[in-house]
Amino acid sequence: MALYEHIFIARQDISAQQVEGLVDLAQAVLEENGGKITKNEYWGLKSLAYRVKKNRKGHYTLLNIEADHAAVAELERRIGLNDDIIRHMTLRVDEHETDESVQMRNKNRDERRSSRRDEGNFERSSS
Image (cartoon, rainbow, N blue to C red):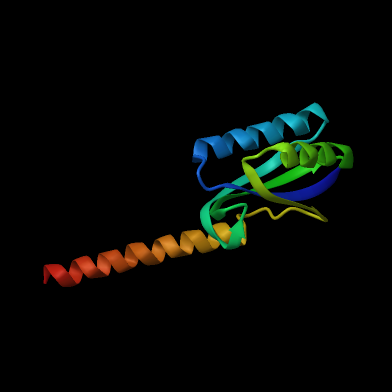
């Protein structure tokens, strides 16, 4: 089986639970065709560089897939029919990253920075 990375962007007006439903749909399609999702990362609601189908933001999700080409082709066909997904891209890779993606590392770094900044403001205001 081949290894793929699949990223999709869902509309901004759906909830995170509905995005999880889209991931479940992708998993069902792949399992029907003998594939599987090895990693699922929800990157959150992010701003788009330009408007896409009247959306300024989108829910980004990364899926690491282990499947045959036919399974991935069927997944792309079904995702193309879904109105909640505004963009998607699938890349064939030689190997999957074992740790978290760069997007998740940056997100965690930003969260740590903001918590340190909040703690610093608290210390200054209490003096």
